[in-house]
Image (cartoon, rainbow, N blue to C red):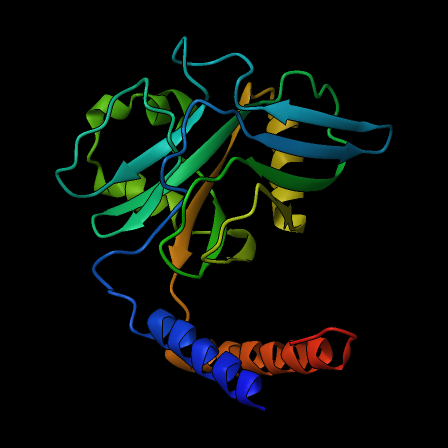
Length: 232
């Protein structure tokens, strides 16, 4: 019983730490860059993997990065895809789609590799992008409020909850709107297809519900261990 109480107290401390997260520091995927990311494309005939490293617009860096609307400086060769709220940054991934000759795409999954560090649990949202790929790659022109908002608004392609403790990679399914837009881009003969990303911090009530679930799981695990031979 003592161990159960200790576990609950520890859980409360951890989850209260999440609830008291400093709103002036909220980021996802910090410390990224140098590693390509992928778009898994399912067609009527096969499955194809597209990479941000294919046909780089800026030689020597992957077709990915971030834009902000404040005075933070950036560079063309910086392919970090960090999202940040303070200062505000939205990110993007661009893929060479010239290998897709016919508009027969039926499914899409964004595969994020080595996603770095997260400050707190957040929702990650993916949107359509109207900014030209060559303009996105000219990150030395940052900041740009129009590009920043373009990457984090518009037609929603997909979303996923990102935990504070990061995973080695993420697989985020994209919806029918993304599939339709990619098919249209193939039909138009476009060379590239871009996806923009932004983050959202859950409401405290959402975190509280998650915390309650976490505490229950912790308590059950402690009780289970106590019943096992040699459990403490």
